[in-house]
Length: 111
DNA sequence: GACCTGACGCCCC
DNA sequence: AGGGGCGCCAGGT
Image 1: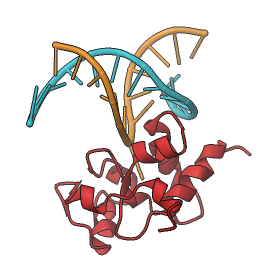
Image 2: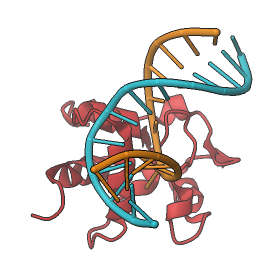
Image 3: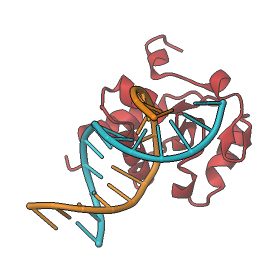
């Protein structure tokens, strides 16, 4: 296939993020052993071109900032979606990032 | 083919 | 605790 195989892996992990929870690029990169969080962000950037729905808005940087908001239809789409799921966002940063943080390891924990 | 940039993250100062 | 620099993989110029 044309796209790197890890694209699907990133999409799959991102799709498993529970509603109302968020994670960061590093956690996904570490879980998939990609070796670089940049690859996750790059894959998610291209995910918009993909036909399947991927909750890319639930993936933030390590500081809990909406660093990818600019890649959405509008710069506020990411924040709107997060707030729609009960996540508070102020100044492009998720409030209580630690509490709503979700780690890919939880997939193995079956929830 | 070399250099720079990017939805990142950690180490060092 | 805050700021700056380097490493990471891939793409574009």
